[in-house]
Every structure is written in C-alpha cells, then in structure tokens.
Image 1: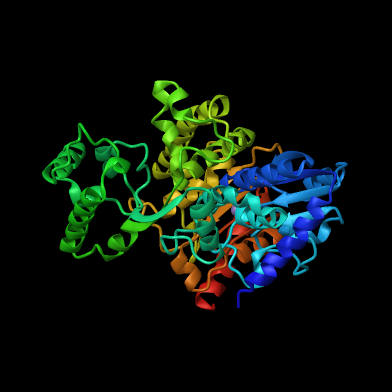
Image 2: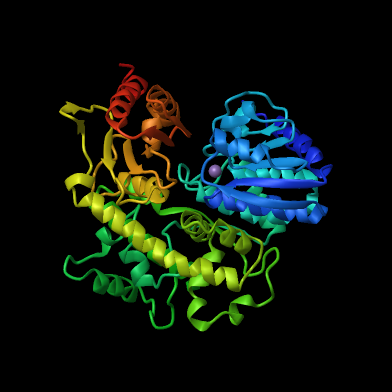
Length: 492
Ligand SMILES: [Mn+2]
C-alpha cells in the first residue's frame, strides 16, 4: 500500500528542519537525477535566503561520509543518495533519496520505500527533493519540470512509456506551474534536434529502420518514406515541426508496416508514450535566450525542450566530471555553462560508441558466459579493464543489454572496469530487464551480498545495480552472483 500522505508529511518534517537552518550543504549524486535534485534544493535554499553550497560525489562510501560529517554546516542535505548509509549519519543529516534504505527509520529520512512507494518507477531522487522543496514553500512548484527531467533521467518512464504514481502528480504540477506539456507522441530519441530521416534511420527501441529500409540505402529509404507521405523535407526538418495530422499519418504508416511484419506487436507498444516538453523560458532563464546563442548552437540547445534529451545532456555533464556545469544550466544559465555542456556532449557520444564497439569486437573485452572454465548459468559479463571508463560503464551495459545486434537480453549483463578513483578496486555494473524483475530478479540484493562476501560493497535497484570489489576477486564475485541470481529467478 502506498502511503502518499505519510510520504508528504515526512517531506514536510524535513522541510521544516531545513527552513530553520542558518547554513546548509547539499550533497548530490553526479547523474541527471542527482544534478536536477541538487538544482531544486539549491534554488529552494536560495529562495529561503539560506547560505549553502553544493557538493557532487560519485558515491557515498564511509570515508566520503566522514568527510561530509566533518563539514561545519547546520544541515547536511543528501539528495539522490544517502539512504544506504542513513544509519551512520548524525542529527544534522537530512536524506532525500529513492535507493534501497539501510534503515526503515523515518526521522530526517525521506524515501519512497519507507512508505510503500516504488522508488524505481514512482518517484526519483529529484522528485523526493521536489516534495521537500514544495513543503518549504508552495512557490517552488515551478521547479517541477526539473524533477521530471530527473525522473526520466533515471528511466522511470520506461516500464509504462509514461510516468506514473507520485511522478504523475509532479507531471500535473509541471503542466500547471512550469508550462510543461505532457502529450502522447512517438518516443524516438532526438525529436527536437535530429533531422527527420536521421531521426528514423538511427532510432533504437523500436528500431524503425527495419520497417523502412529497402536494404540498399537506409538514408534514401527514410527520405522516400517521408516524401511518399507528402512531407516536404525542405520545409519540415524536425519532428517537432510537424502538425498533428502529419504525425498521425506517419505513425499509422509505421504501425501498418509493423503489423504487416507480424512480429511488430512489442514495437507498436514501444512506439508511443507520454512525452514531456519544456518551454523555452523556465526558472531563471533570460528572455529569448535561444536567439542570443551562436547560430550553430541553436539546434543542439533544443535538447533543453525535451525532458529525455535534457536528462541525456545532464548525464553527459556528470560523467565527464562537470556536474556543476549541468546544475548551472538547470538553474537557468543559457550562455557560458550551456555552451560548455553542449560541447562536451559531443565528446560523450563518441566515448559511448567507442566503448560499445570494443565490447562487440569480442576478444578480451567481449561478452562471456564462463569464468576460468566454469560456465555461468544465469548471467553474462564483460570486462572493460582500463579501456572502458568506469563512469560510463552502467550506461553502456544497459545499451548492450537492449541492443538487438548483441542479443543478450535474456540474462542480466554484468560489467567490470578498473576504478578511476585511484583505489585498488574494480567497478561493477549490472543491468536487467523488467521481465527478469517480474521473474524475481533483484540485482541490488544480489550485488550487495556477493560483493560483501568478496570484501567489497554494492547497492542500487532491482533492475540496475552496481558494486565495487577488490582486484582479482572478479571470478569469485561472478560465481556467487550467478548462484544468487539463479536462486532469485529459478528458486534453485
Ligand atoms: Mn536517482
């Protein structure tokens, strides 16, 4: 039973404590959800006139927690992290998180799991932070669009192709107070920024090109697809420029082709969803900012109009050690910081592509199903070593798992890379699918247990989790993990 009232009253209690503080430190995770959460917290504190600073961290381990506890602030406000370390915190700490908590204590601890609300799909770290901020001051409802960016950044819309539960309450706030629109449209990524033929040629999940190509020239086929439907590609460049009638024509053409193939039902389902569009002017932005950008940046800046594309930009900022740049963009900067963010995103795409190619190539970085002669029955893994940056490991594991070319979506995929923080550990990422979770998979529990038994640490969600294990322990870790996941899924 989800207790929304209890959750909100927990948020109100946290809000009261924050409002009474003279100074605060916000500690946030470096992904899109963490960056939006930090931005919401920072704006809310600013509006209350509370002196504060924001500190972004990759993970909250005991030494990191200690260094935060050593800081001299009245309040230490953890956003999008902290629940896994709650029991080690002091009286000044307030946690706004949606990851698995290490304690069911509700004092200074706001987490959907404590109230029967699903933290992997119904509310994210930025949503929890938003609930607290609104309790601080109802005027903060204009920050709702940022919480939507955080939620889709954490893929909370992916199971139902729309945000549900508490998230949908935030969607309604964003429509009313932040000028956001929430409309059914195609889910294809890049509607704001990619020219139509390219949008369809490179789309994944569903992979539209399969229904369009003549097998000779993909780009030509896409162009023909649109022109045959009467879309003038000289006049209409982007999906968002199409009117409703044109969109309906294209969607029905796609659906017809999918049904004709006889294997398109799942693709038809994935094609449409609720799409969240953010207006040009939001909290803190200057008027007409897009016209004041250099001409060649105007198209790429349109990522800020789509919650999913915005989240992708923030993830790129975080993974390239520029979370503060992302936060300034969330807080309204549309010049210096926005340009920095857009410039590094192009580099991000390249590094993802390179890493994925490396795994697909096979050899030492390829996907494997056995460790030193022992077959794994319930998982697959690959080892990125030093060649794949640990900061992008989770993203590429998810991309590979869902890649139709690789065909490995029937078992959880586990990935290793050397840790970049100088410690003698391996970073581990694991990704599963909704289907596996329905069959009992809880990657978080399995990762926590296996890593602990190998002298490491772990945590996350049932569908996506991570761990750190000492060098040389990967085989032992994999065998334990394989057994635990077998027990979860098959009851072995
Ligand atoms: Mn999160």
